[in-house]
Length: 245
Image (cartoon, rainbow, N blue to C red):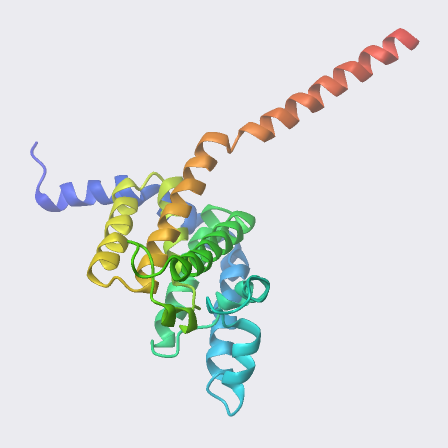
């Protein structure tokens, strides 16, 4: 029996997102909002910073605790990077950042786990921040260099983390078309709009791919080693007891 186009599309969708949908559904059904405390907290922080930075004196306060620029000393940038992820851009609608973070962070929290979600989000955000500093240092004469004025551009927001988490989620759930689509879109953005944000997204994609591949290759290595060490220790202890007896 021949399948119609709708049936074929449905089968492709199930093959691409079936594992992801099942994991998210099970997590939400079992724990409701308790399944995504990290996503809820991140979304609340973005909303809070968005409100505060539009209050009198609020932008100055937010700048001092969460705004990163390549012109800042490295130690200051590193200290501010964790909070910079939650400081939304002033020229973009905050609802977009709220929706992206709640959905992508929530899915990542269920699929990847809380610890892995934080590792990916902060590692890829930091990679973009460091790339901006390197780009300014090498100058506009290089392919990935920037003019000096970029050092004073505000470099905040969750977009790099969202892109990176989307890549890692797709890898974990074997959604290869989705992973390829995200990579293609980010590279296309950087080509069409070769600005700081676009290139930082590409850096986040590269960092996320490295993390995802490393997790696939080495993810079960150390747990197996520790399990083997534990088993060997138990056998040795049992043997010692028998000899003593």
